[in-house]
Structures are given as C-alpha cells and as structure tokens.
Length: 367
Image 1: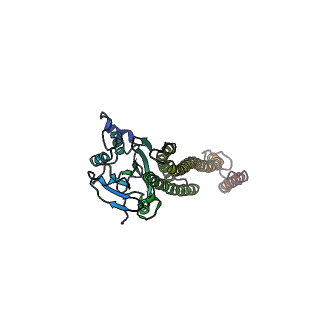
Image 2 (image 1 turned 120 degrees about the vertical axis):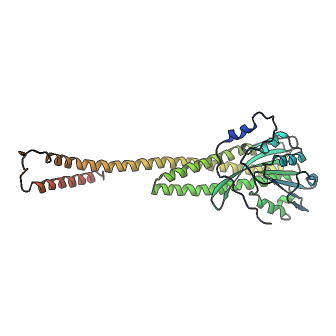
Image 3 (image 1 turned 30 degrees about the horizontal axis):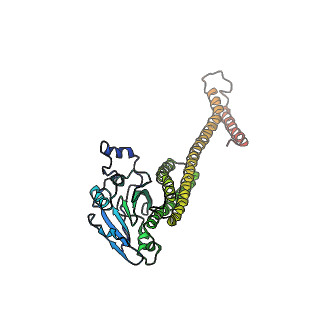
C-alpha cells in the first residue's frame, strides 16, 4: 500500500481558542459547529474489519453504509480523515449511536485531552504531535477516539497520521493486534502517538543543545527569538501532555466494563510513558528559562565590557585633554610658550602618561 502523504498543518497556531469557541455562542448543547482551521476537500472514511482468521480493508466508504461494523465476531477500526464536514461526521456517529454532546466535541479542535464515559462507549481526545521531516516543524493535530465493545473510531483533522505501523501490524497474520479486542487496539493507537512525543522531544533536546552552543559563541537577538519560539512549542506540548495523565489514570482505575482488567496493564505502561514525557517537558522548560537568563547575563556582561573599555579610554584621555587645554590657552606670558623644544616635550609627556596608565590598568587587571 502506498504511504499516505501528509498535508502540513500550521506548526504553532495562535492562542485563539476563546475566539474559536465563540462561534457556538447562543446555540443549544450538542450543536455541531466545526471549530478549527478552514479545510478544503471531502472527508475520507476507511476501515479495517478483522479477527485472528480474517481481515478486510475498506476505502472511501459511504457514511450511510457501515453495516459491516455490526459483525459480533470481528473488531472494526473506522478512521475518518477530515472533521470539517459536519454532515459526514453526523452520519458516522448516527450509525454507532454516539451522543450529540460527543459529536459536538469531535468537531471542536480546541479541546484539551480528556476521557468521557458513556453507557456503551468511551470518548477519548488526544493531541497527535509529530515532525514534518522537510522543515522540522512540529505539527499538532487533534485526534478523537470512540471505543466500543467491538469497534474503535478515530476522527482526525486531516488526511495523514502516525498510525501506519498499526495498520501494518493489523495486516500481519498472527500479530497480537489480530488476537485482541478493541480495547487493545485503542491502546496501540494511543501508544504510537506517545512514541512520536519522544521523537519530538529528542529533536527539541538537540535544538536546546545547539542554542546553548550558539549562546556561548555569540548572544545575538536571533538566539533570543529562537528561545521564545521553543518556549511556545513547549507550552503546546505541555498543554497536550499534562491532561493525559488523568485520562490514563481514569482508564486504569476503570471498572473493566469497556477496557478489561487484563488489558489495563498496558495502559499502566502508557501512564509511565506519559509521566516520563511530562518530566522531560518540565526539564526543557527549566533549561530554556536558564538559557534565557544566561542570554541576559551574556548581554549584560558584554555591555559591561564595552563600558569598561570606553571608561578606560576616557580615563586615559582625561589628563591628556587637561595638558592640551592648558597649553591651548592664548596667553603671551605663559612659561615655555616660546621654548624651542616645548611642543615635542609636551607630546612626550602625554605619551608617557598614557603608557603609564595602560600599564597601571593591566597591573590592576582592569584590561
């Protein structure tokens, strides 16, 4: 199968979540209003229907015909690329009996990660974060999961994701995914998202090291701009990761109704990964704050060095200016004004004074 080509999301959208949600002002609860970046094109629905013995893959499905999902002997993964078409999302949700409040949240891309429990499904929201290899941009996309007893539905903002390895494992006969139920499929999808968090953090770590090296070489304003950009990136990472701890904790402490106790051990492993990611994000924030302070210190030190040199130069010229001022006064009766060697002697005295002061400053380690 040909690898999907990603369309680039803006790496760091502006913090205008309040402005986005204001579009729903005055509407009744459950109203489906797409909150997010304007999109073009149609939503695309694909699905895997599988168990240990059989596998079927469906492309470009009609949202009105998902009857194969009713097979009690298989696990179904329905993926929807593009949530801007609320009519398509509504039809898909109608097929699975998803609550109107969940439908409203699916098309709202400004949500923080969360989990909601309903009678016959779980609704989970995560942020998918990965790198665009050509530019090194950090891409952030919201993914919504609906977990039922026999199915998982993923709703993505656009075409392209990090789930290719999960698809490959589903196609592999005898794989653990083919033997497990939908709760394990949800774990696999969440785990691959978290794995890409580590890839992003590894890249950020390299950028911070490069910034530190540049800072010691030359503390320019471009470095300050890079520090501010990375701080903003970490704000988005923190916003995407920190709520996940409560999400996974709620799954682990669940009653086993939708996620069996046998599978909860895998989610405990996810919790450990999330804790590691959050610690790393906090460490990077501290490092960037330290780099910012170091930048200010370096700038201050450079300014002090410049002021010290200028002060020393001014100090050296003060006695020279005094001598030149004395001998520049227009009085005929001044001594040595008509002396033949007066001019070179004055020059010699001034040079000797300047050299003596320079040696004195060096001896005091001011230079």
